[in-house]
Structure formats: C-alpha cells, structure tokens
Image 1 (cartoon, rainbow, N blue to C red):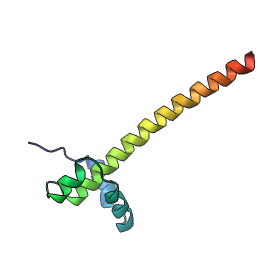
Image 2 (cartoon, one colour; image 1 turned 30 degrees about the vertical axis):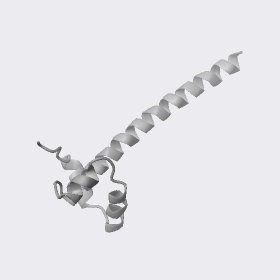
Image 3 (cartoon, helix red, strand yellow; image 1 turned 180 degrees about the vertical axis):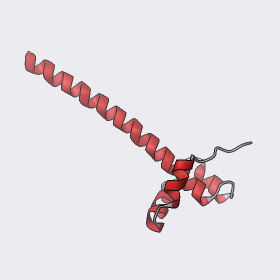
Length: 83
C-alpha cells in the first residue's frame, strides 16, 4: 500500500520550523499520522509537513465558513434596517 507523500512546499516549511514550533505541531498530530510516525512508516519531517498541510486546509475551510456567516449576518442586518 502506497502512503501519501507530503507536498514539497510544506516539506520546505517544515524544515524551517523552530524546535519549539515543531514540538507544538507534533503535539497536534491527529488521525493516522501519530501511528505512522511511531511505526516509522513516515519520517518526522513528513509528518510535520502533512500536519501543516492539514492545518492550512482546515484554516481555509474555516475562513470560507466565517465569510458565509458574515455575509448572511450582513444580509439580515440590511433587511432588518429596511423594515
């Protein structure tokens, strides 16, 4: 079974992390990443890069949801002001 490889740009970001930032990122590993790291199926650098990618995707999704909520609230406020 082929495992997913980390994106090159995220590998570069992971290489440039401070020891403190890397430790914090490792503490936030979720899903299968901690098990794969413990079983040496992926390197520490790959795990960091994959976690960075996951967190960027989650942040992007969160921003989209917040934008939708803010747009909805602005529409409600505008309609309330008209009435």
